[in-house]
Length: 148
Length: 113
Length: 124
Image 1: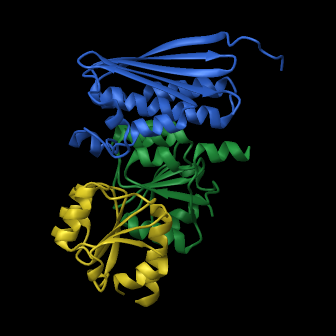
Image 2: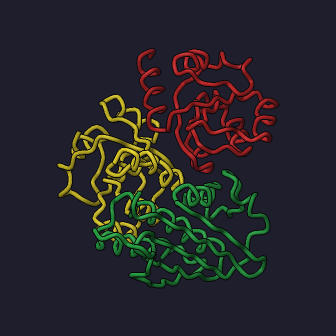
Image 3: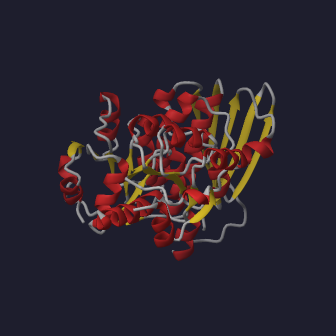
């Protein structure tokens, strides 16, 4: 494979998530997984991308009004950006703590909301950025290196 | 079989209520959904879960469980420990995941029966 | 062991994937929390769970889980079954509780699975 000097964008696509609708929760992640699989990325790269995307998607469905997932494939990395319009996170440090959760009973019955989501996202990302504004929404940016 | 035997056989770390390790274990229940455990577990069960918040103590106490084992080296919260000590529900921690821990306990209970 | 053996050991009904019973399955993960599954379960394992909603199927798909075993006689609804068919994920249903299900499979030699992605990539 030729050595790439720049990390140029080779693929970009956006997906929309509807908040509160658990019937479709996970559909974006399933699509992204199948796109990455078709592009023949190594299975552990596909797995990491799918997991971070899925946990983020569940968060948007659980807490926000709506959200968008921007998938960007560069020569060296895959970036998954998830931006939602929702209540925002008052205390990010607290939210990142394993076990901390503000989930409703409904979310818990779905098998989520045990305070593991953001922690999982961080641990499966090679780089992770989170920012949030109260009353506006939250942005997550996960980067997965193609060469693990 | 009592809790003490299980603690010894599986090298569990006892977090609280160690005075109650003589509790007899009649069977096991593995689950993370409190409503399920509430509905379907039985008196004398050893409850295997990865939930760590204090509500687990209420469930174990109401259902008269022999004790709770947290999987995957999960640490109980301070509230959980305080409440469990008060209610005299032993909480133990294992570094195994649910499948393997359940398998080992199942085998132990089968052997002695 | 084969998925067929799992069916026998657990006296289970096959809800989806009658044609996949000859699939080799050797590791299992039991959980009701999907984040726990996402955090630790290995590709190719079977997932033992008391949850029956779409998220179980999605989680299994994301992780390439070989098959799902619903415990406590749980049945999934028609939409969830259709999703599993679409994503080609076999579903079995056993009347045993998770404790008994895991215990019986473990006694027959099935092993647990725990894998962090990082460990997996370190081996590759």
